[in-house]
Amino acid sequence: MRYSIPAAALALAIALPRPASAQGPRFEITIPAGVRNTPLTGRVYVFISSKQNEEPRLGDHGESNCVPFYGVDVDQLPAGTAAVIDGTTLGYPVASLKDIPAGDYYVQALVSVYVDFHRADGHVLWMHDDQWEGQQFNISPGNLVSDVQKVHLDPQAGYTIRLALARALPPVAIPPDTKWVKRIKIQSKLLSAWWGRPIYLGATVLLPRDYDRDTTKRYPTVYEQGHFSLRAPFGFTTEPNTETAAQRAARQLRTSAEPGAQFAQSWQAPGFPGMIAVTFQHPTPYFDDSYAVNSVNNGPYGDAIMLELIPYLEQHFRMIRTPEARFLTGGSTGGWEALALQVYHPDFFAGTWVLYPDPIDFRSYELVNIYSDTNAFVYPVADWMQAEVPAEVEVTGQPRITVRQESQFEAVLGSHARSGEQFAIWEATYGPVGKDGYTAELWDLETGHINREVAEYFKSHGFDLRDYLERNWATLGPKLRGKIHLFVGDYDTFYLNLAVYRMEQFLKHATPSADAEFAYGRPMKPHGWQPWTNAQLIRIMAAQAARHRSP
Image 1: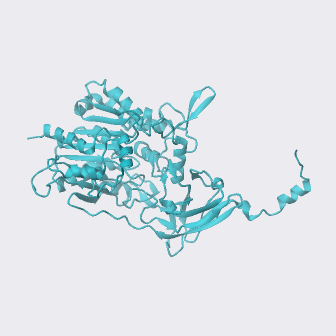
Image 2: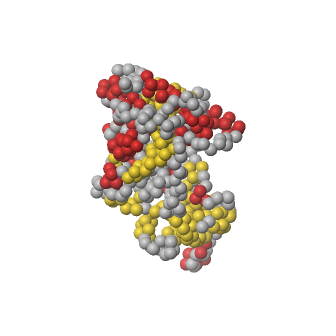
Image 3: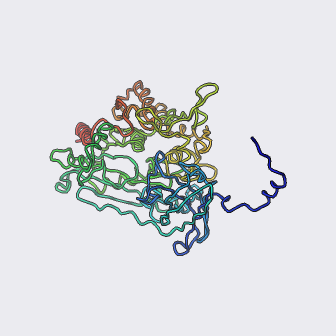
């Protein structure tokens, strides 16, 4: 049954001022003058957690498991002036503060501080300057955070929560050098000139047994690629292994890779092959890692690694400085890099052992074909049906999150491809510069519409590694024969096995012969699978180095 409201009463209701609760949910974040006295440009976040045991900014913070958070840009915000996050601000995984259920929560604000980069191409960009934390905005030194407050939130009643950014995060603690592990950090002239600010490269070096005894002996080197980390190569550690029996059993179902303490026992043992192992540190304003190649958005990171960092290492450590003694490996991001470095520098490295690499054929950009699909979020099932495109999958086949959700995650983290996350760095590495000087995005993070011009740029500039190899195989084939080894689980969490299948289809029938090795973890092996322990991989590389050693 419907009830009608008299017109006079309706007019009176409209005319009367609305109660304060109609304002809806609202956070006001300020920077007291004593904390920072100059205007601030950056991105302000609010984190909302139901847990009391840790600061909300430190809680789970991946796209498939994180506390609700919300972000907004600020431009030259004066001290004492509030940045506002309200019901219209996009969040993740809960899109709006209006959808946070009423209850008691622990809340915290943080600002990622941006600085101006006057790039060599003439563009001025405001971005976060890495402080040797690997673009981890929630722990980056100099970023400002508030104290944690326990509050009651009720979006129906409305609220205004005021948070003051009370302190700057402290510097990163660099682990000390030991007999086995040495760390270096150098300013790159090439990158500093490109970005208009000091940019640094680093490396963590793992030395072999008896390195300090025979000061004339030189060693082969394996470069392990991967995300920014200050830990030693292959997780080497002299700390005891704390892995439980249950954890060991779960790990062994996924991969043969051993814990770092177990690897260290092999590395230190008499008779273990003598090699030097190296990991790189090369964070950029876009990500924790540059992908080790030159880019119109990132600058000449490939040149900086090949012309500055590796020569520095070979001058300061007793490495054999010939191609047959230089090896590559890495997984995921590091897997793409390990293949790209070998492909782009076929005469410099002796071989690459590539693990579950990021997409190496962009017809399988995870599950998106960037050349033929029109939308990254959905695909047609039938004339009147379409389905969401998954971004991650369990080994049971159950999707975890979708490309739409992952795109929302990145949109909340940062505008203008400043999320510091996966889609943004792929675009910054492979794609063109946008009209505003920031990275041109492959697809719209709100609609999923794919920009065909950006996709074609990826291919035409050689970042689709399968396409690049196929177009240049007459020259590259003889140089790469026997040097490419690719490994991935048959149920890779991010569908990365699909691009590896495509690469195998080409290399298995390439002329001249590639003599490439492919292996797939079966059954139901996820992201992170490898067929041997790290110690076994070192033995494989050392044996090859011995077979091809120059007089």
